[in-house]
View 1 (cartoon, rainbow, N blue to C red):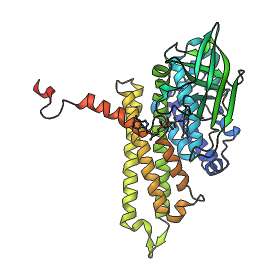
View 2 (view 1 turned 120 degrees about the horizontal axis):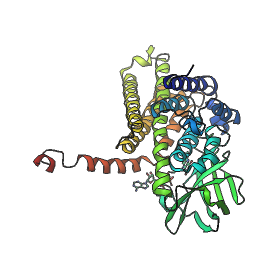
View 3 (view 1 turned 135 degrees about the vertical axis):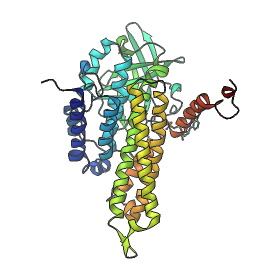
View 4 (view 1 turned 30 degrees about the vertical axis):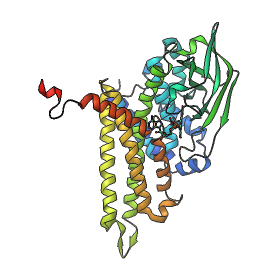
Length: 390
Ligand SMILES: Cc1cc2nc3c(=O)[nH]c(=O)nc-3n(C[C@H](O)[C@H](O)[C@H](O)COP(=O)(O)OP(=O)(O)OC[C@H]3O[C@@H](n4cnc5c(N)ncnc54)[C@H](O)[C@@H]3O)c2cc1C
Protein backbone atom coordinates (compact mmCIF):
# COMPACT_ATOMS: atom_id res chain seq x y z
CA UNK A 1 0.00 0.00 0.00
CA UNK A 2 1.26 3.48 -0.91
CA UNK A 3 2.31 5.49 2.15
CA UNK A 4 0.97 9.00 2.42
CA UNK A 5 3.31 11.99 2.67
CA UNK A 6 2.07 12.54 6.19
CA UNK A 7 2.94 8.96 7.21
CA UNK A 8 6.35 9.25 5.61
CA UNK A 9 7.04 12.54 7.36
CA UNK A 10 5.88 11.11 10.68
CA UNK A 11 8.03 8.04 10.16
CA UNK A 12 11.24 10.02 9.61
CA UNK A 13 10.73 12.49 12.46
CA UNK A 14 9.82 9.60 14.78
CA UNK A 15 12.97 7.75 13.75
CA UNK A 16 15.02 10.89 14.41
CA UNK A 17 13.54 11.27 17.88
CA UNK A 18 14.11 7.60 18.67
CA UNK A 19 17.72 7.81 17.43
CA UNK A 20 18.31 10.92 19.55
CA UNK A 21 16.82 9.40 22.68
CA UNK A 22 18.46 6.00 22.40
CA UNK A 23 21.84 6.73 20.81
CA UNK A 24 22.71 10.34 21.48
CA UNK A 25 21.43 11.87 24.66
CA UNK A 26 23.43 9.66 27.03
CA UNK A 27 26.60 9.94 24.89
CA UNK A 28 26.66 13.67 24.12
CA UNK A 29 28.93 14.45 27.09
CA UNK A 30 31.32 11.68 26.00
CA UNK A 31 31.47 13.04 22.42
CA UNK A 32 32.08 16.53 23.82
CA UNK A 33 34.91 15.34 26.10
CA UNK A 34 36.60 13.16 23.49
CA UNK A 35 36.15 15.71 20.68
CA UNK A 36 35.07 12.89 18.44
CA UNK A 37 31.80 11.95 16.78
CA UNK A 38 32.10 8.22 16.11
CA UNK A 39 31.70 6.94 12.56
CA UNK A 40 28.97 4.56 13.71
CA UNK A 41 26.78 7.56 14.61
CA UNK A 42 27.25 9.00 11.13
CA UNK A 43 26.46 5.58 9.63
CA UNK A 44 23.27 5.26 11.68
CA UNK A 45 22.16 8.73 10.60
CA UNK A 46 22.70 7.69 6.99
CA UNK A 47 20.82 4.40 7.46
CA UNK A 48 17.91 6.18 9.14
CA UNK A 49 17.68 8.58 6.20
CA UNK A 50 18.46 11.66 8.28
CA UNK A 51 21.36 12.90 6.14
CA UNK A 52 19.16 13.25 3.07
CA UNK A 53 15.98 14.20 4.90
CA UNK A 54 15.18 17.27 2.79
CA UNK A 55 16.67 16.11 -0.51
CA UNK A 56 14.02 15.16 -3.11
CA UNK A 57 13.42 11.41 -3.53
CA UNK A 58 14.68 11.63 -7.11
CA UNK A 59 18.16 12.29 -5.69
CA UNK A 60 18.07 9.65 -2.97
CA UNK A 61 16.50 11.70 -0.18
CA UNK A 62 13.14 11.83 1.57
CA UNK A 63 11.75 15.17 0.42
CA UNK A 64 10.83 16.29 3.93
CA UNK A 65 9.16 19.70 4.16
CA UNK A 66 10.85 22.50 6.13
CA UNK A 67 8.58 22.23 9.19
CA UNK A 68 9.18 18.52 9.62
CA UNK A 69 12.90 19.03 9.03
CA UNK A 70 12.89 21.67 11.77
CA UNK A 71 11.25 19.20 14.14
CA UNK A 72 13.84 16.58 13.20
CA UNK A 73 16.68 19.09 13.77
CA UNK A 74 15.27 19.98 17.17
CA UNK A 75 15.13 16.32 18.24
CA UNK A 76 18.73 15.67 17.26
CA UNK A 77 20.00 19.05 18.53
CA UNK A 78 18.35 18.65 21.91
CA UNK A 79 20.30 15.45 22.44
CA UNK A 80 23.68 16.42 20.98
CA UNK A 81 24.84 19.70 19.42
CA UNK A 82 27.78 18.19 17.54
CA UNK A 83 25.57 15.58 15.90
CA UNK A 84 23.05 18.27 14.96
CA UNK A 85 25.94 20.22 13.43
CA UNK A 86 26.37 17.41 10.91
CA UNK A 87 22.79 18.03 9.75
CA UNK A 88 23.49 21.76 9.52
CA UNK A 89 26.65 21.34 7.49
CA UNK A 90 26.06 18.25 5.39
CA UNK A 91 22.30 18.39 4.87
CA UNK A 92 21.44 22.09 5.04
CA UNK A 93 24.56 23.90 3.83
CA UNK A 94 25.67 21.38 1.22
CA UNK A 95 22.79 19.11 0.10
CA UNK A 96 20.02 21.72 0.10
CA UNK A 97 22.27 24.12 -1.76
CA UNK A 98 23.12 21.57 -4.44
CA UNK A 99 19.43 20.74 -4.85
CA UNK A 100 18.82 24.37 -5.77
CA UNK A 101 22.04 25.47 -7.41
CA UNK A 102 23.78 22.49 -9.01
CA UNK A 103 23.25 21.22 -12.55
CA UNK A 104 21.61 17.80 -13.02
CA UNK A 105 25.01 16.55 -14.13
CA UNK A 106 26.56 17.56 -10.80
CA UNK A 107 23.59 16.22 -8.87
CA UNK A 108 24.02 12.85 -10.57
CA UNK A 109 27.70 12.90 -9.78
CA UNK A 110 27.40 13.77 -6.08
CA UNK A 111 23.96 14.47 -4.65
CA UNK A 112 22.63 10.93 -4.38
CA UNK A 113 25.83 9.82 -2.65
CA UNK A 114 25.49 12.73 -0.23
CA UNK A 115 21.79 12.17 0.44
CA UNK A 116 22.35 8.53 1.26
CA UNK A 117 25.45 9.25 3.34
CA UNK A 118 27.86 7.39 1.06
CA UNK A 119 29.80 10.66 1.00
CA UNK A 120 29.95 13.38 3.64
CA UNK A 121 30.00 17.01 2.56
CA UNK A 122 31.28 20.14 4.26
CA UNK A 123 31.13 23.86 3.64
CA UNK A 124 34.40 25.73 3.11
CA UNK A 125 33.83 29.48 3.08
CA UNK A 126 35.67 31.06 6.05
CA UNK A 127 39.36 31.89 6.12
CA UNK A 128 41.70 33.32 8.76
CA UNK A 129 41.09 36.85 7.43
CA UNK A 130 37.61 36.40 5.97
CA UNK A 131 34.82 35.68 8.47
CA UNK A 132 31.81 38.02 8.54
CA UNK A 133 33.20 39.66 5.41
CA UNK A 134 33.08 36.33 3.60
CA UNK A 135 33.09 37.88 0.13
CA UNK A 136 36.72 38.86 0.74
CA UNK A 137 38.12 35.31 0.66
CA UNK A 138 41.59 35.06 -0.85
CA UNK A 139 41.44 31.43 -1.94
CA UNK A 140 41.88 31.78 -5.69
CA UNK A 141 40.85 29.94 -8.83
CA UNK A 142 42.18 30.17 -12.36
CA UNK A 143 40.75 28.55 -15.48
CA UNK A 144 43.30 26.31 -17.24
CA UNK A 145 41.77 24.39 -20.14
CA UNK A 146 39.33 21.82 -18.81
CA UNK A 147 40.14 22.47 -15.15
CA UNK A 148 40.08 25.21 -12.53
CA UNK A 149 43.23 25.49 -10.42
CA UNK A 150 42.55 26.32 -6.77
CA UNK A 151 45.02 27.75 -4.24
CA UNK A 152 44.39 28.93 -0.68
CA UNK A 153 43.50 27.91 2.85
CA UNK A 154 40.14 27.63 4.62
CA UNK A 155 39.66 27.81 8.40
CA UNK A 156 36.99 26.58 10.87
CA UNK A 157 35.62 23.96 8.51
CA UNK A 158 33.25 21.74 10.49
CA UNK A 159 33.51 18.02 9.63
CA UNK A 160 36.43 18.64 7.25
CA UNK A 161 38.21 15.91 9.24
CA UNK A 162 35.83 13.25 7.90
CA UNK A 163 34.32 14.87 4.79
CA UNK A 164 34.72 13.43 1.31
CA UNK A 165 33.55 16.53 -0.53
CA UNK A 166 34.11 20.26 0.09
CA UNK A 167 31.91 23.06 -1.20
CA UNK A 168 34.64 25.67 -1.67
CA UNK A 169 34.34 29.40 -2.37
CA UNK A 170 37.14 31.17 -4.20
CA UNK A 171 37.85 34.50 -5.90
CA UNK A 172 39.47 35.48 -9.16
CA UNK A 173 40.12 39.24 -9.02
CA UNK A 174 36.90 39.82 -7.13
CA UNK A 175 34.82 37.36 -9.19
CA UNK A 176 33.53 34.80 -6.70
CA UNK A 177 32.75 31.21 -7.70
CA UNK A 178 31.91 27.94 -5.93
CA UNK A 179 33.41 24.51 -6.60
CA UNK A 180 32.94 20.94 -5.44
CA UNK A 181 36.35 19.59 -4.48
CA UNK A 182 36.97 15.95 -3.62
CA UNK A 183 39.10 15.19 -0.60
CA UNK A 184 41.47 12.93 -2.51
CA UNK A 185 42.21 15.36 -5.35
CA UNK A 186 45.98 16.00 -5.40
CA UNK A 187 46.92 19.17 -3.48
CA UNK A 188 44.10 18.99 -0.89
CA UNK A 189 45.35 18.74 2.71
CA UNK A 190 43.33 18.67 5.93
CA UNK A 191 44.84 20.05 9.16
CA UNK A 192 42.77 19.15 12.26
CA UNK A 193 41.94 21.88 14.82
CA UNK A 194 40.98 21.46 18.48
CA UNK A 195 40.32 23.44 21.66
CA UNK A 196 36.80 24.74 20.98
CA UNK A 197 34.20 26.20 23.30
CA UNK A 198 31.47 24.03 21.78
CA UNK A 199 30.73 21.81 18.77
CA UNK A 200 33.79 19.95 19.99
CA UNK A 201 33.01 16.69 18.21
CA UNK A 202 32.64 18.20 14.74
CA UNK A 203 36.01 17.14 13.35
CA UNK A 204 36.93 20.78 12.76
CA UNK A 205 39.89 21.45 10.48
CA UNK A 206 41.69 23.89 8.25
CA UNK A 207 41.86 22.81 4.63
CA UNK A 208 44.58 23.89 2.24
CA UNK A 209 44.48 23.78 -1.55
CA UNK A 210 47.77 23.78 -3.44
CA UNK A 211 47.42 23.83 -7.22
CA UNK A 212 44.34 21.62 -6.95
CA UNK A 213 42.98 20.84 -10.42
CA UNK A 214 39.19 20.72 -10.24
CA UNK A 215 37.27 19.53 -13.33
CA UNK A 216 35.37 22.41 -14.95
CA UNK A 217 32.08 20.52 -14.48
CA UNK A 218 32.54 20.84 -10.68
CA UNK A 219 31.86 24.58 -10.87
CA UNK A 220 28.54 25.14 -9.05
CA UNK A 221 26.03 27.39 -10.87
CA UNK A 222 28.51 29.47 -12.87
CA UNK A 223 31.39 31.89 -12.84
CA UNK A 224 30.70 34.89 -10.60
CA UNK A 225 27.82 33.20 -8.77
CA UNK A 226 29.84 31.99 -5.78
CA UNK A 227 29.21 34.36 -2.93
CA UNK A 228 26.08 36.25 -3.96
CA UNK A 229 24.20 33.19 -5.19
CA UNK A 230 25.56 29.85 -3.97
CA UNK A 231 26.88 30.94 -0.55
CA UNK A 232 23.78 33.01 0.18
CA UNK A 233 21.57 30.05 -0.69
CA UNK A 234 23.64 27.88 1.64
CA UNK A 235 23.43 30.41 4.47
CA UNK A 236 19.65 30.66 4.02
CA UNK A 237 19.44 26.93 4.70
CA UNK A 238 22.16 26.88 7.37
CA UNK A 239 20.49 29.68 9.35
CA UNK A 240 17.21 27.81 9.41
CA UNK A 241 19.01 24.83 10.87
CA UNK A 242 20.73 27.03 13.48
CA UNK A 243 17.41 28.63 14.41
CA UNK A 244 16.06 25.18 15.33
CA UNK A 245 19.35 24.35 17.04
CA UNK A 246 18.71 27.30 19.38
CA UNK A 247 15.24 25.99 20.23
CA UNK A 248 16.73 22.55 20.81
CA UNK A 249 19.42 23.72 23.22
CA UNK A 250 17.09 26.09 25.06
CA UNK A 251 14.46 23.35 25.45
CA UNK A 252 17.10 20.98 26.83
CA UNK A 253 18.27 23.66 29.29
CA UNK A 254 14.69 24.40 30.35
CA UNK A 255 14.11 20.74 31.17
CA UNK A 256 17.39 20.49 33.09
CA UNK A 257 16.54 23.61 35.11
CA UNK A 258 12.99 22.50 35.96
CA UNK A 259 14.01 19.01 36.93
CA UNK A 260 16.75 20.35 39.24
CA UNK A 261 14.59 23.10 40.76
CA UNK A 262 11.94 20.52 41.63
CA UNK A 263 14.47 18.36 43.50
CA UNK A 264 17.08 20.59 45.13
CA UNK A 265 16.26 21.93 48.61
CA UNK A 266 17.71 25.02 50.29
CA UNK A 267 16.34 26.90 53.31
CA UNK A 268 14.10 23.90 53.95
CA UNK A 269 12.17 24.13 50.69
CA UNK A 270 12.62 23.19 47.04
CA UNK A 271 14.51 25.94 45.26
CA UNK A 272 11.77 25.93 42.62
CA UNK A 273 9.46 27.52 45.17
CA UNK A 274 11.69 30.60 45.47
CA UNK A 275 10.13 33.29 43.35
CA UNK A 276 13.45 34.47 41.88
CA UNK A 277 14.04 30.95 40.56
CA UNK A 278 10.48 30.85 39.25
CA UNK A 279 11.20 34.01 37.26
CA UNK A 280 14.04 32.24 35.43
CA UNK A 281 11.77 29.28 34.67
CA UNK A 282 8.95 31.57 33.50
CA UNK A 283 11.31 33.49 31.20
CA UNK A 284 12.70 30.25 29.78
CA UNK A 285 9.25 28.77 29.10
CA UNK A 286 8.19 31.97 27.35
CA UNK A 287 11.38 32.38 25.33
CA UNK A 288 11.53 28.79 24.13
CA UNK A 289 7.88 28.95 23.05
CA UNK A 290 8.41 32.24 21.22
CA UNK A 291 11.55 30.98 19.46
CA UNK A 292 9.81 27.79 18.34
CA UNK A 293 6.93 29.82 16.90
CA UNK A 294 9.36 32.07 14.98
CA UNK A 295 11.04 28.95 13.58
CA UNK A 296 7.67 27.55 12.54
CA UNK A 297 6.74 30.86 10.92
CA UNK A 298 10.01 30.77 8.97
CA UNK A 299 9.32 27.13 8.09
CA UNK A 300 5.88 27.92 6.72
CA UNK A 301 7.26 30.82 4.74
CA UNK A 302 9.99 28.60 3.29
CA UNK A 303 7.48 25.92 2.37
CA UNK A 304 5.33 28.47 0.57
CA UNK A 305 8.41 30.18 -0.92
CA UNK A 306 7.19 33.41 0.66
CA UNK A 307 8.76 36.73 -0.24
CA UNK A 308 9.93 37.22 3.35
CA UNK A 309 11.32 33.71 3.85
CA UNK A 310 14.95 34.88 3.95
CA UNK A 311 14.28 37.56 6.52
CA UNK A 312 12.01 35.36 8.62
CA UNK A 313 14.81 32.82 8.71
CA UNK A 314 17.29 35.52 9.83
CA UNK A 315 14.88 36.71 12.52
CA UNK A 316 14.32 33.16 13.79
CA UNK A 317 18.08 32.50 13.84
CA UNK A 318 18.82 35.76 15.66
CA UNK A 319 16.09 35.37 18.28
CA UNK A 320 16.59 31.70 18.86
CA UNK A 321 20.38 31.93 19.33
CA UNK A 322 19.93 34.93 21.65
CA UNK A 323 17.40 33.22 23.88
CA UNK A 324 19.40 29.97 23.86
CA UNK A 325 22.25 31.96 25.38
CA UNK A 326 19.94 33.46 28.04
CA UNK A 327 18.13 30.24 28.90
CA UNK A 328 21.31 28.17 29.19
CA UNK A 329 22.89 30.89 31.34
CA UNK A 330 19.85 30.72 33.65
CA UNK A 331 20.07 26.92 33.70
CA UNK A 332 23.66 27.21 34.96
CA UNK A 333 22.40 29.71 37.55
CA UNK A 334 19.61 27.44 38.80
CA UNK A 335 22.03 24.53 39.16
CA UNK A 336 24.49 26.72 41.09
CA UNK A 337 27.85 24.98 41.59
CA UNK A 338 26.58 21.91 39.80
CA UNK A 339 25.78 24.15 36.84
CA UNK A 340 29.49 24.87 36.51
CA UNK A 341 30.47 21.20 36.66
CA UNK A 342 30.78 18.93 33.67
CA UNK A 343 28.98 16.11 35.51
CA UNK A 344 25.75 18.01 34.78
CA UNK A 345 24.61 19.04 31.29
CA UNK A 346 24.02 22.77 31.96
CA UNK A 347 27.60 23.93 31.36
CA UNK A 348 27.82 22.05 28.03
CA UNK A 349 24.51 23.51 26.87
CA UNK A 350 25.76 26.97 27.88
CA UNK A 351 28.92 26.53 25.78
CA UNK A 352 27.00 25.14 22.82
CA UNK A 353 24.51 28.02 22.89
CA UNK A 354 27.25 30.62 22.52
CA UNK A 355 28.44 29.05 19.28
CA UNK A 356 25.04 29.74 17.70
CA UNK A 357 25.57 33.49 18.05
CA UNK A 358 28.75 33.24 15.97
CA UNK A 359 28.08 30.79 13.14
CA UNK A 360 26.03 31.27 9.95
CA UNK A 361 26.40 35.03 10.35
CA UNK A 362 26.99 36.53 13.81
CA UNK A 363 24.16 38.12 15.79
CA UNK A 364 25.51 41.56 14.85
CA UNK A 365 25.24 40.76 11.15
CA UNK A 366 21.70 39.47 11.67
CA UNK A 367 20.86 42.73 13.47
CA UNK A 368 22.19 44.77 10.55
CA UNK A 369 20.10 42.82 8.03
CA UNK A 370 16.97 42.81 10.20
CA UNK A 371 17.23 46.55 10.86
CA UNK A 372 17.64 47.22 7.13
CA UNK A 373 14.54 45.09 6.46
CA UNK A 374 12.70 46.93 9.23
CA UNK A 375 13.42 50.33 7.71
CA UNK A 376 12.35 49.19 4.25
CA UNK A 377 9.17 47.57 5.50
CA UNK A 378 8.03 49.96 8.19
CA UNK A 379 9.46 53.43 7.52
CA UNK A 380 6.69 55.74 6.37
CA UNK A 381 3.95 53.61 7.90
CA UNK A 382 4.00 55.40 11.22
CA UNK A 383 1.94 58.37 12.34
CA UNK A 384 2.50 61.22 9.94
CA UNK A 385 4.40 59.03 7.46
CA UNK A 386 4.09 59.50 3.74
CA UNK A 387 1.92 56.41 3.28
CA UNK A 388 -0.70 57.84 5.58
CA UNK A 389 -0.85 60.99 3.54
CA UNK A 390 -1.71 58.99 0.43
C1 LIG B 1 32.16 26.17 15.92
C2 LIG B 1 32.35 26.87 14.61
C3 LIG B 1 32.06 26.19 13.42
C4 LIG B 1 32.29 26.81 12.19
N1 LIG B 1 32.08 26.09 11.03
C5 LIG B 1 32.33 26.68 9.84
C6 LIG B 1 32.18 25.92 8.62
O1 LIG B 1 31.79 24.75 8.64
N2 LIG B 1 32.47 26.53 7.44
C7 LIG B 1 32.88 27.84 7.38
O2 LIG B 1 33.12 28.33 6.29
N3 LIG B 1 33.04 28.57 8.53
C8 LIG B 1 32.77 28.02 9.74
N4 LIG B 1 32.93 28.73 10.90
C9 LIG B 1 33.40 30.13 10.83
C10 LIG B 1 32.27 31.11 11.12
O3 LIG B 1 31.42 31.16 10.02
C11 LIG B 1 32.91 32.47 11.46
O4 LIG B 1 33.55 32.33 12.71
C12 LIG B 1 31.87 33.56 11.49
O5 LIG B 1 31.41 33.85 10.20
C13 LIG B 1 32.43 34.84 12.10
O6 LIG B 1 33.63 35.20 11.48
P1 LIG B 1 34.94 35.51 12.36
O7 LIG B 1 35.09 34.43 13.36
O8 LIG B 1 36.06 35.78 11.43
O9 LIG B 1 34.57 36.82 13.16
P2 LIG B 1 34.72 38.33 12.62
O10 LIG B 1 34.05 38.47 11.30
O11 LIG B 1 36.11 38.76 12.75
O12 LIG B 1 33.81 39.10 13.69
C14 LIG B 1 34.28 39.37 15.00
C15 LIG B 1 33.25 40.25 15.69
O13 LIG B 1 33.07 41.48 14.95
C16 LIG B 1 31.70 41.65 14.64
N5 LIG B 1 31.53 42.29 13.34
C17 LIG B 1 32.16 41.98 12.17
N6 LIG B 1 31.71 42.77 11.18
C18 LIG B 1 30.76 43.57 11.73
C19 LIG B 1 29.91 44.60 11.21
N7 LIG B 1 29.91 44.95 9.93
N8 LIG B 1 29.08 45.22 12.08
C20 LIG B 1 29.03 44.86 13.39
N9 LIG B 1 29.80 43.91 13.93
C21 LIG B 1 30.65 43.26 13.11
C22 LIG B 1 31.12 40.23 14.63
O14 LIG B 1 29.70 40.25 14.81
C23 LIG B 1 31.87 39.59 15.76
O15 LIG B 1 31.24 39.91 16.97
C24 LIG B 1 32.74 28.14 12.15
C25 LIG B 1 32.98 28.83 13.34
C26 LIG B 1 32.81 28.21 14.56
C27 LIG B 1 33.09 28.97 15.82
